[in-house]
Image (tube, rainbow, N blue to C red; front, side, top):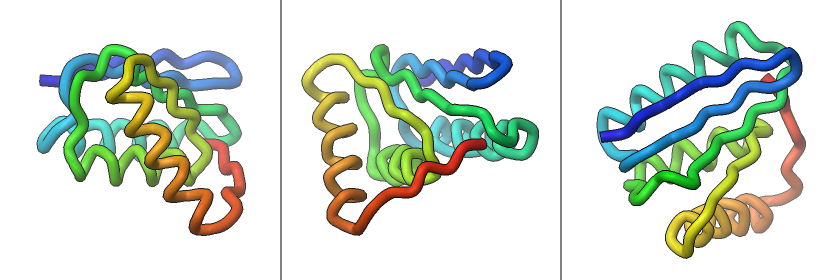
Amino acid sequence: MCRIQIQRGSGSTSFTLEGVLVGPWVRELDRCWREEASRGAGKTVVVNLTSVSFVDAGGRELLGRMRSQGAKLEAKGCLMKSIVQEIEARQSVGGEQSEVKL
C-alpha cells in the first residue's frame, strides 16, 4: 500500500509518498502527476520519498520520468538514497538534463 499526499503552494507542488510504490500505486502516482502537470504550469515539483520502503521497476521508471521532467526527488535511508542515485546516474550518462517545471 502507498499513501500519496499532494501539497500545493503558490510556486511549488510536493508529492509525499509513504509505503511501497508498486503496481497499482505506480499507476495512481502517474495519474496524480499527469493531473498536476495539466493544472500547474511553471511550478517546481518535489517528490518526498523519505517514508517509502520499496519501489518496483515500474516505480523506478516513473520516478526517472518525473525527474527528467524537472521533479526533485528527496530520499532518506540507504535503499531510497540508492534508488535516487541510480536514477540520477542513469540520466547523467544519457546527457544533460534540462529542467522542466510543471
